Amino acid sequence: MKKLTSILLAAGLALSLSVPALGAEETADLVTDAYTYSSDADGYGGEYRVPQVNLAGPGGLAVNAAIWEDLYEGYMYDVQNAAESGEWSYIMGIDYSWAVSGDVLSVLATVRYEANDLCDYFIYNVSLTDGERLSDRELFQALGTDREQFNELLREAVSAQYDAFADFADADFIATQRDNSLSDEIIARAKPYIDPDGTLCAVGLFYPIAGAERCFQTFDLTPAA
Image 1 (cartoon, rainbow, N blue to C red):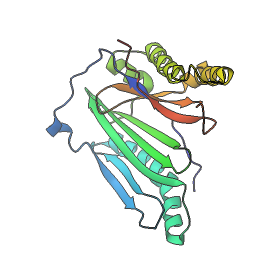
Image 2: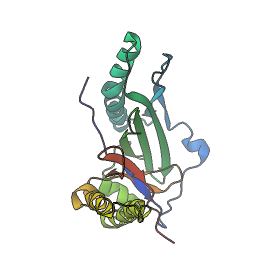
Image 3: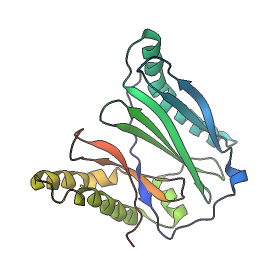
């Protein structure tokens, strides 16, 4: 099986960046299942859904090829082999959500593991006009923001996670984890997407208080009132 690929994804950013969305009838079939699988082994696995974008042209074909490679080739062979052999797979499910804002279609795929609630995230931001994947910079431009503002809101959201543990006994440990999560290198790796509410979001690498040493996590970047 190919080496598992993890793509950072990102936290909710609700600025006054609303872009008129298409109507429900126009977007209902933009993203559908390309593949589904349900494990029926006792105590094993769950539901697995690999999406496809229904956009004509070479851009849409390229996006779907990337999704298939990332999710089916990257994970499903292991899941199916484990089910057929009666063995245990640590990959417990694959699902996705998607949203449209203006010309942007944003798909977030989530691969769930059985240990420590760990997830891999894959983001596909696509232009509805030409079906091409958007860079982070192009996504920010489409939404009227930039990387600097995105990073600032992400830092606020990450800090809020640690503020909830302000009275925790090991203050030095919390400070160390906070510094790790807020480092320039980690913040720069966060990836943006749009959630079903039309809010700009991101997945970033996070150093938790307990559990795994570090993990990918989604954040809501809605500015404080």
